[in-house]
Image 1 (cartoon, rainbow over the protein chains, first blue to last red):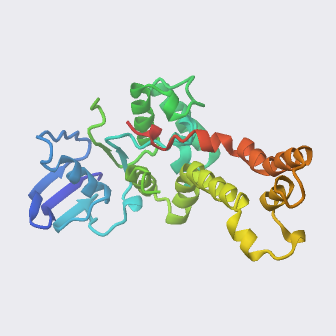
Image 2 (cartoon, each protein chain N blue to C red):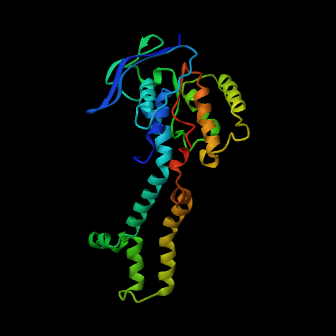
Image 3 (cartoon, rainbow over the protein chains, first blue to last red):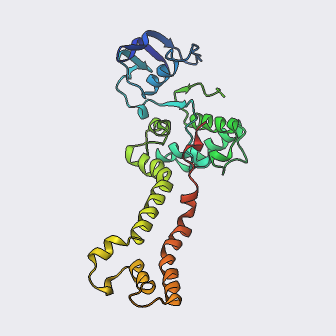
Length: 163
Length: 116
């Protein structure tokens, strides 16, 4: 079904309400862009979907299942962080495949997915470089590759085109 | 460890990676330069310690190298510069070797280069 549904979701830090009663359904195949001034809760909303931020009140449903208490690793969500969050000691290939290796995905499958994303994001030739040896745009693409390679149900891109 | 961007840990959490694995694969490799530098610094400080050993060591057979070195350049045994220089070199060998082995950790740290 691949659907995200917010039902009267609130997020507050003490007396500061960041997200106020959000009701929203993102249907399968939809791409939703959240626009707004800084501090209006865009990142917080994404982080709540990812499970990196607790929901103060209300319910979040992922694929029809209430996800408020599901740990982030079990939500089948891929996220590109605002600062890319690439592992600095791992090269491009290791950064992209680390999650799959830990999940014990079969080697052939990892290789297949890796080749596909390297091709798609034009990262061939940069496989063995560390993030510090990449340009800003290349890092951005590695971060995107790391999200795409997971084949998750949901992709969250947190302002990653910001320069 | 506080300097490691939290987003690195969150990225790993999204991949359903456990705390122990995050510690082993992400945190420890990133703090290795700092831990190694601190370790070497402590080692050299202890190695060069003079006052504390001289207070507690009663027999000369147990003297540490800096104390032994002092013996050759004090009035106690007369100043024998040739031997004193040789002992100085011997005293330096271990800290110098450690430094040469771990210098890449001491000189370079790249914890934050994976972020924007």
